[in-house]
Amino acid sequence: MGKIAKKELKEQIILGIDPGTNIMGYGLILVRGNKYEPLQYGVIHLKKYGSHELKLKKIFERITGIIDEFLPDKVALEAPFYGQNVQSMLKLGRAQGVAMAAALARDIPIAEYSPKKVKQSVTGNGNASKEQVAEMLKTLLKIESIPKLLDATDALAVALCHHFHDGRLQSRGRSAGWKSFLEENPDRIK
Image 1 (cartoon, rainbow, N blue to C red):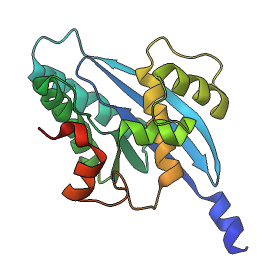
Image 2: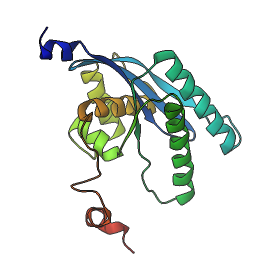
Image 3: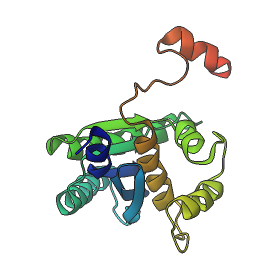
């Protein structure tokens, strides 16, 4: 069997996660060579838990359960983005960290992608709306209907982004480092 045929037979499952402290999206895709299909996607509802600590515990339990059920080969997460509220970003970062810890506890490699990178990878437009991402996924993954909560399709987009970029060095922009960051984010300098 030739090298190309073996590569095409390779299967892997990628778990994509759209971190959140009230709603966390997850999506699993099965990849066979260059073909991919959705396995499952949905959301983890966290609003009903009173404390942030309890939400973190539930995130760990649910992500661990998904990992144990589907045995993904890789986990990809959307990176938190800086908004106006620093406390919200800190909480979101903790949620992402707990999801990462669940994967790392099972020795599953993780990757992180900026929201812009995910949108660019799936739609060709880094500024696409959640609705545009969902519509493109409907076509790419042959999903019959878009779920009510778009956190689920966002998570599928993260998994698909990872498939498209797997094996390539990830950095946010042309080159890593503070100089590059400052050049790409002049509005963040005060």
